[in-house]
Length: 512
Image 1: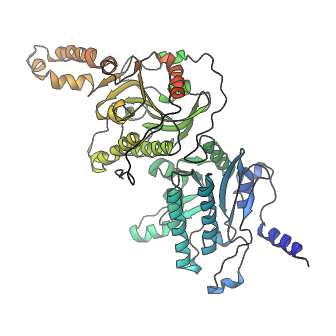
Image 2: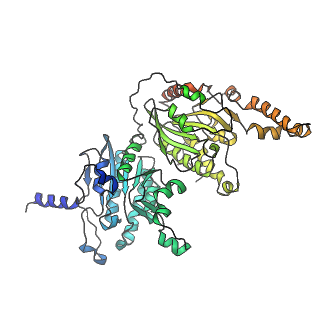
Image 3: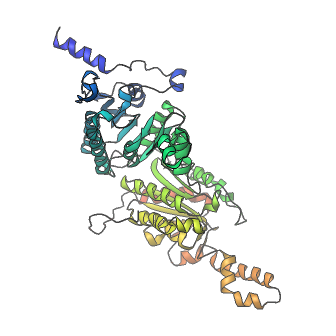
């Protein structure tokens, strides 16, 4: 038998489970194999495997007789839409995808290459956890991966697709990546499983309820996106990647775009005349951004703030927007954490930010105070203040109190701040302010209710508008809603080559 024949047999043995590449109804219903996932993720024939012949070194508990080439993970590099990426896909058919010392070494090699060559890293996670037979060697392998996640953070984009179980220590690697996508009904993440939970707390809970895609997309906010099946998950990885640059020294792709009539007259009637009536900020986003380009992140978590990517005249931008349809658009603990993390990602990878403001303040209450709204609100303030990418703000209606400052105000380094004529920039709402400022006059009036209304109108005329702020230069321009898209396109084009120098330091100390 020739050496070439032997190599061909070994490679064929390592690639058991791959083969069929046609997308059909069966693929949409079932979990894909590790190699099928890579096939559908990468450009045709672009994937180059690394470490196909690696096998584990364990000799305890009869493991010396159970060796499989590749050791439960497929690693390599290739292209997605012509862009170099590095990928690993855990193979649940080999020891349940469990992580061994050599399994970890393969992943670490791919991570090192991604950082050295400045290309995104994509992990397709489907693992039962640490390989128990290897003991501390397996735990050490996890720590090696965690360390590299941190080294790669802010250097190259890291995306984790959870396409099966991910439990125990394994969850901390995805948690340190930039984005997590979970497949509904077939993936779960938790530190301790249902059996341990029952033993310790006597709670009866299923894997799905404890750490499924639904739980993490609505309750914990751990996952950024959910997918209906493996193919949908892979497509969302590709879509997410399309808004990002290759690395922190690169810029997102600027798609070809020809300027035409950029006025959007639908915006003129978007904000209701009644200041207490909500409207959908996503309708505003749809009118401002390129058609069909908005891609929302964490849609079902902290719905009072909207985060997502979009394109504006072909440019990739990040959008952070208050949502009046949920809790009147207030800032609270969860929305502050959600948006602060998104702001930091955009700043890491040179993605300009558009901030749409309609915020009546911070959510009051003991629940918020006891869950550290002070510290968590400061995270968003800190993230915006630290960001050096182009930052543009548009105030559509309310911008009250400290929340005005936090939502990318001129005072914390925003480059351009616009406001619609409907904008109200003040310390607080007219009613509350009037009750404080004119308390003696109202109490002494023959008709206190009528006097309060009179003083409300007086306060509103003085402060509940954008013109006082514009006089001071805190607002660069008060614009008609219909010209918002045109103004924003010009602003971001003007800011394209922005450079900011910060004081030299080891790193900031964000209030975690």
